[in-house]
Length: 275
Image (cartoon, rainbow, N blue to C red; front, side, top):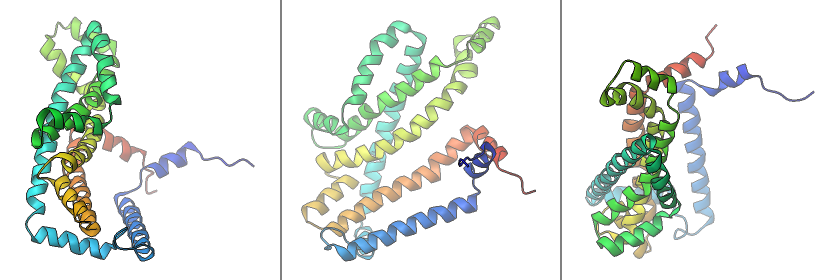
């Protein structure tokens, strides 16, 4: 007898309730903490500090008053680079979707930019802008523009021609067509790309600050590394991860659900009824 899973069972298990999600998420985090603690017992504190030592270091940098200003510096740089990337990438993707010559001329360039490792952009930005926030913002923007461009272009290329013909038959202006036809369709492509781009922006910012900034989370990590303080290094990493998750689940995801409420409605409709 061959093992098989029916489509109905897949649908039933694909959308667990909020309580089930919380339980499984908590179990995964607990397993990670236990593995971390066991690893710290097997290795030296320099190689892997315990969760308790890391928590102590995190409290220390918070009490010293250095963590929050550095966190704010990083957040502002991420915001600046992210907004610039979304504005430039979406505008280029929209224009390329409307103009085939522009699509064929700009597309390969941005594809090449996507293949450049972020560390290479960090090095170039340091040469062009020197140490400081400008280099970090530039690195974030140039690393994210291709992602936003490709998502926007893909959205433009998948617009239903019938909708375009309907807009033309009603003689809608370009601005009205953009608002009523193009942008609602682009959101389904652009929003997931923006969520992904934001996560990349946070990581790129910390990496750029680690190599070329006097402030920010990456700078704090660089100082801890130079002092061979592994527990403090882990504390800066935890602060970076925790702040990212707070923004991701406290701001980005609620905004995502608000802009596309049909996704939650579709997920609820797939859940099996209590009967």
